[in-house]
Amino acid sequence: MTHAISYPPLNVLKPIADGVWIVDAPPLQAGGLPLPLRMTVLRLAGGELLLHAPISYEPGLRRALERLGRIGHLVAPSVGHWMYLRDWQAACPNAITWAVPGLKDRGQVRRSSVRIDAELGDGAPRSWGDEIAGVLVAGPVFKEVALFHRPSRTLILTDLVINLEADLLPLPARALARLLGIVAPDGKAPLYLRLLLRLNRSATAEAARRLVAFAPERVIFAHGQWFDRDATGELRRSLRWLIGPEGSKARRGSSANRPTYALPHSTAAMASLALVGVIAALAYAGKRR
Image (tube, rainbow, N blue to C red):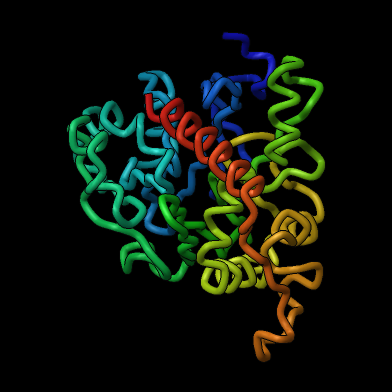
């Protein structure tokens, strides 16, 4: 697998802000689409480290992390970002593993022997103090907990925004990425996730408005070119399919004042939805290998 779509140097800590680092990893394959992969690291006020969406375990990376602080928290923030937890748990047995609601009940997770100590939702655990706010974004099949690091004003996502650089992708993958709507500079949630989240539109739109209302200075996500400039504007653009062009400025009036989305009813539309469902299944199966 080519590493051309990743962001070297790989498996190396890169400082982003005070108490915030990222680690870019070799790409993975999701439904035939190569995806760059990224972990975010936060250092809490007490000195412990939080690993958000851990990438593949490397002893050298663990040693570099431990020079920053003790690894105290492993976070599986979405249904597709848990597959490397077991090796990190073995290397850091005292770390608490947090996961998106329902992850521990999935068959693949149970069979993997991954340990889930506690679930995340809206808000954040007391042990994280007031440093981090959590926002649950949930639809059928898909759940993601977004984290906002208040001291650095950094919003951390996984799959709610994917922003791949087209010129780094092979031609067939480039076409698929455009179909899914995940190509920079207009990256967003892939088409199948947008359809799923629209089935719970009221709750997910409210969650999206909360994310924009944080007014983050940067938005880091697991796949692609993250937002390091005009982050709030870029986030609002990425979520406009859900909250409309006004974003967080939209009034919370009656439903007549809000953008509406009709679910498809025609045979052709349902066939398209079924095709997207197949793509979704392939994508999640690929990400969990």
